[in-house]
Image 1: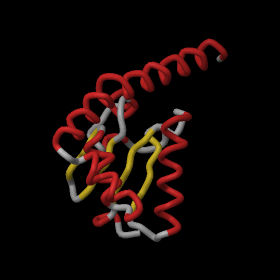
Image 2: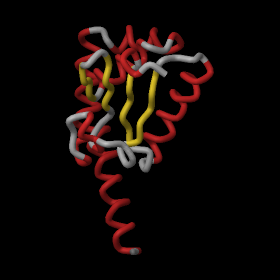
Image 3: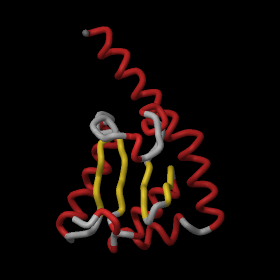
Image 4: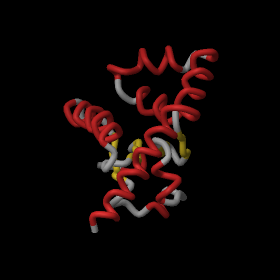
Length: 128
């Protein structure tokens, strides 16, 4: 796969919510031979992304044409690259809806999922 024109998606495969959703997109992309690459933040060299492991675990990131998009902006880029989800990108991309979706993702959903991630890490350390 030519990585210069590939949209790269960075996600946390250890997060059950993240993994479920992103693997769904990955299967769709493979079925339709889309130039999307899905990368687990737990196994990738994050220096290529310019992110720390903690930053990467806090939200979805998408790299396309040399630009890094995070959160809802990342989802919009990802959805635009998948015909089945372009309608969702158009709706969520509308000014008022985009603002609301970003606020919900940035201030409620992503922090909740991140705290869940930290709790799982603490439990793993206690078991070790």
